[in-house]
Amino acid sequence: MPLTWVLPILIVMGLVAYGLSRRRAIASVAGDARRLHSLPGHYGLNALLATMVPALIVLALWTVAQPLMIERMVAADFPRDAVAPGSTLALTLSDVQRVAEGLEDAARAGVIDAGRIAAMNLEEATEALRAGGTVMAAPLTEAVLTAAVEYHARTVAMRRAMLATLLAVAAIGAVWALHRSRGEFRARNAVEQAVRLLLIAAASVAILTTLGIVLSMLFEAMRFFDQYPWQEFFFSTTWSPSFSGRGGASQLGILPLLWGTLYISFIALVVAVPIGLFAAIYLSEYAGKRFRTVAKPLIEILAGIPTIVYGLFALVTVGPLLRDAFAQPLGLGNSASSVMTAGLVMGIMLIPFVSSLSDDIISAVPQAMRDGSLGLGATKSETIRQVIVPAALPGIVGAILLAASRAIGETMIVVLGAGAAARLDLNPFEAMTTVTVKIVSQLTGDTDFASPETLVAFALGLTLFVITLCLNVLALFIVRRYREQYE
Image 1 (cartoon, rainbow, N blue to C red):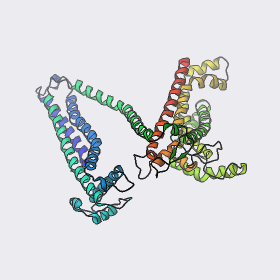
Image 2: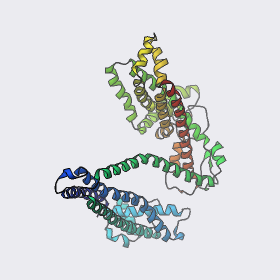
Image 3: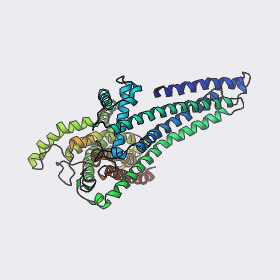
Image 4: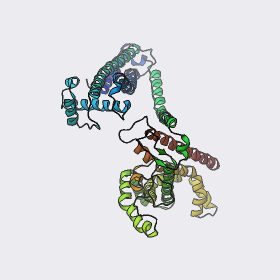
């Protein structure tokens, strides 16, 4: 039975349990629903939740654990002398998984018979992978094919075991709920408690996700610092990774990347913050209702444009324009890829983040503050400058913080607009790069997760996370300070 049928089957079982539980509860009081402790629907919902929720929890845990278990089993049987020179067991196992998935895709597409996967030779497997659209970086070997067949067989077996387990868990939950569906059972309390637990779990997703991200980066960054000196990483001014020396020939200093990140983000904020804030003030305080209803959606369209489109705009239009109009006449450079190009285009992209949020917070300032200022003789501009903007400052700081975080994490605009050169330079018309671009480049292709050249991506990501956290703490300090004054 395909796994795509699992969720529909669980839904059907839950609905059947809902109807049977509701009917059993009514039958337990001789058909008089007034004698039930709860509404009939509560008994049905209790059965529905008891049938589906435990099975879905098992499905989520199984989905996470199954690949790890299979990979560990296959790795235990894989001959170490079959690992190609210059490769590692982890890279070889990734090839094994790719071959296993490619053979399964070919069988699903009808290219080969699923029952013949275990008996295929190298030529047949290679042809099946090619016909199924799987691209291999290296020729298929006998050891990899054998391990891939084992990987596929264990995957099929564990899928069947998972399906049987899910159906058993759902059936047990349904029977248990039906047994409890009697008139004296407090079904409403049970349903409310279950819903409360589900809401707590939903609220915990963001916290647990953040914790998982931090821990995953932290552990890998610790592995990196075990192989590469932290002093050179944080204080070296040279970024020159070399994948041939396992760290011996690499210079992985973060300072050039950090400088490019902050330089481009600063230019972007210099463009976005004044324009966005002035646009928000005009829309909320000066613009008429008809103009506002047209202008605000048009500004927010900028937020919906894909970043790759902004990158192409920077590469094709803004970069050559800045080079021809400023860089070459002033003798500052001949490249269309520059910090100024990426900063200007990124600033245009960030305008709606600042404008929309600032507009909403300025509009939320109580009208009584405006009327009081105007009643004391202040002009409209003085009211905006001395009353409205200070009162809305916490929200404006939040908007600027969101724009800054967006600028620090941007990648595509930097790749196409600023280039990939890691350097320390004050010239805004020179090509530079950022931390996020190098994270992508270090994790692209067949990477060895035991080498410092790959693990450095996690150290870069952790550093970027700390910077963003510091920005949040600073913004929180400003918000709390001014909120006390204006609330």
